[in-house]
Image (tube, rainbow, N blue to C red):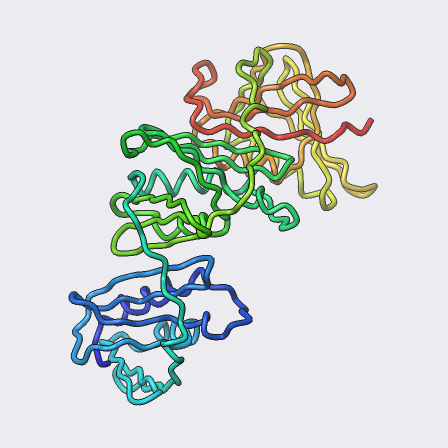
Length: 379
């Protein structure tokens, strides 16, 4: 094999191919990136049996072939090469990478032992990349990071012909984003995607055209594929039943407060400075506005008051600041509505529902909803 490619294009392609690979693997061959010539240039791929990535780039192919080489090492090298065309060639079991006066020689890995990448079927639907990336960022923060319960480490995608929803939970909060998309006729499907993979997909396909999403079922390996701009990522789906958390959202709420979103974010960030780790902030809503209070220690306390329009009775809730900030980051509106719910147990506070509003008086759409369970109040 021998080819020449643009340095920035090649470096970006290698970085993309290895981005989802685990830092450590029990099978060294799975740490490799497979480079193959195609009719229109090069294909770079990686695969660890759970996640795969493939990208095609333009290149001047002088000798066709395929080679497997250490992915992260090649990415580090490509990123440091001088800004001149990159040439890669192979001889026996060695790979030479050069650019200008820089020369690197690497050992290749046995291509015959590398697993075959998943085959991709027809897409289930198409969605604008920027919209999809933004929706992922809104929801993925609520996914659990505790591998003890794998089903809640994923994001549940539910699709119809015209819409798709993303849902995540870690038992303490639930985030839901609903958006329009172009699904196939008769589409009615769901997929539980690992949150880490979906987050990387959101970053990778943040701009440029539409993203094709394909959900493939049947057999032992059910997977989802995302494709755009000559790039494809596939992931195995998480097996199991996602909890029916959407039913936790109230249909309506007549008890709520409306606050300027940016002012609330800044106030929470300031007042939480005196808190010890895992402690919660106290939020007191009344006709006079909102008072935030933090009792950090004997040496430090904090309090701040904000303008807020309250509909309903005065209420006090205790919320973890980072969980609240995660929800507020998904509210892409000037104002935020915090709605209060009730439970059958008067000693246990109901969850608060966070949504966006266009103005203090006019509510926004319900595309993004974030349900957060308060802490028990410490009297």
